[in-house]
Image 1: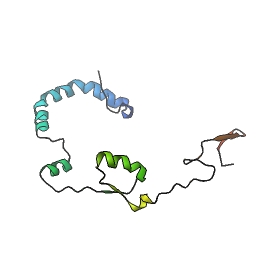
Image 2: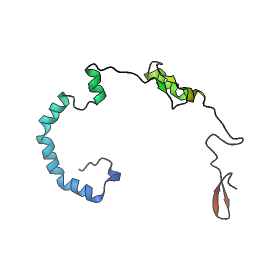
Image 3: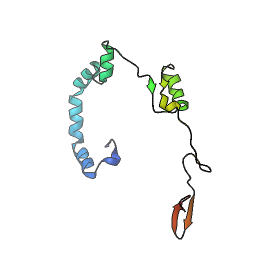
Image 4: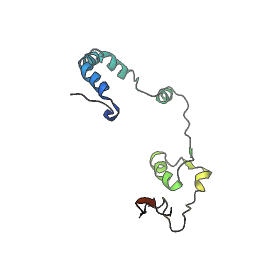
Length: 123
């Protein structure tokens, strides 16, 4: 059996190479098992942030968010950050500006005129 990660992005040639070399790759992985176990014990999979935090480097929470509307940021702030995140002034001033008779995301209604599909409002 051949397992390919992101198979939708792999060409036939790359798949063929994997199939032909699969036994040698298996053999390499089998021989490297002791080094893989050592790497796990040494925690080589940790990020630089995790490593620096573990040895006592100062951590600072960036506590102002400038992207989400306050009603959206409320949940992650309460659930994951103990309400330590504040909304920036730019997001506090967000206002919904709907055009009269339109939905927030525009109309998806289509009209068919003389064989052409024209988005609503473009007539």
